Amino acid sequence: MIDKINRLKEEIEDFDITDAQSLEAFRLEYLSRNGKVQDMFKLMGSVPKDQKAAVGKLMNDVKVLAQERFNREKEKLERAQTKQFGPKDDITIPVEPTYTGSYHPLTIALNEIKQIFLRLGFNIADGPELEDDFHNFTALNFPPDHPARDMQDTFFIRRNDTGSKDDLVLRTHTSPVQIRLMKEKNPPIRSIMPGRVFRNEAVTAKSYFQFNQVEGLYVDRSVTMGELIETLVMFARLMYGSDVKYRVRPSFFPFTEPSIEMDIWWNNENGGQWLEILGAGMVDPNVFDAVGVDSEAYTGFAFGMGVDRIAMLRYGIDDIRLLYDNDIRFLNQFKL
Ligand code: DAH
Image 1: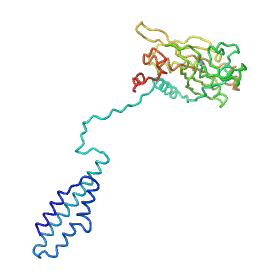
Image 2 (image 1 turned 45 degrees about the vertical axis):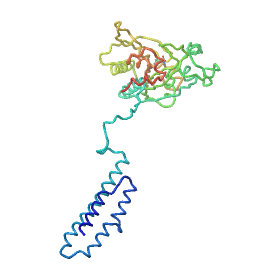
Image 3 (image 1 turned 90 degrees about the vertical axis):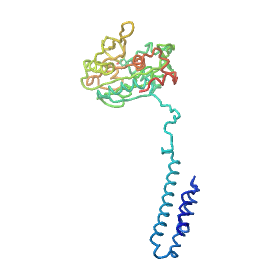
Image 4 (image 1 turned 135 degrees about the horizontal axis):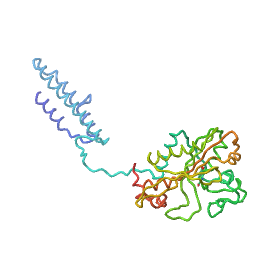
């Protein structure tokens, strides 16, 4: 009897379990109701009384052994299936490289600009890239014979020369979004409007037929030029560092009066130079009239800046075309 039990024990230990099928065969053979372990217990009846306790213990050990082997093999198979790390896996084997994406330098620059103006209490608005002449020029106080209305400068998509919504252009700046905003809602308005703009320019290292701008507009009762300059200086400090050297010059735009431009001092190998970073001014009353805002009750300031220039300065990119070629070798350099 003892021999029989020991043989069964060995059998259980040596049973070949390699997959789900052999595991199931093991279970049927030993652990099922008609399995060999149950059969073994049936032999208890023929065991002399004085040996019953000892034999019973042996039998029980075999039963436990079979159940434990089953559990262990089952777990092993499951682990192999879900490819989890186990003692048998070599975690030093090199993995297939995975390639992570990266942000485009324009996106990085734009995100920084957005963060700064969100902090200053501006929200974000946008408008269409295909504009009509009214929004892109007329409502912004461009005279009918302004050179920007020339096909040499502007991509006209449909042209009837009415200066109205019949004429379609690829927007030449983000300023038309100001018009849309003011038509849509009443002041106070405090928004920035990022977007892509288009100009009919020869493609060179310095100019391209598309680029990106961020427009700003603040309209309320008694908005002042002082607040405009305060806002722009704050922007320059947050964008370029608190020790940034800047200057503000008078300028001209049809849609602002007075108009200014802001330059920052950019250090380079040759010492440095002034670089224009934005145009700005107080919203011209003619613009308020075009959108039905009471120019007696409200004043406002506006500004517009180029994003490409900021990204190029920041990363030392000397050819604007690189920003639009989408060459992966270029883009991969801008990991955050
Ligand atoms: N729209 C102008 C441009 O593309 C930039 C600009 C200047 C925008 C003055 C403004 C502004 O809002 O007030 O050159």
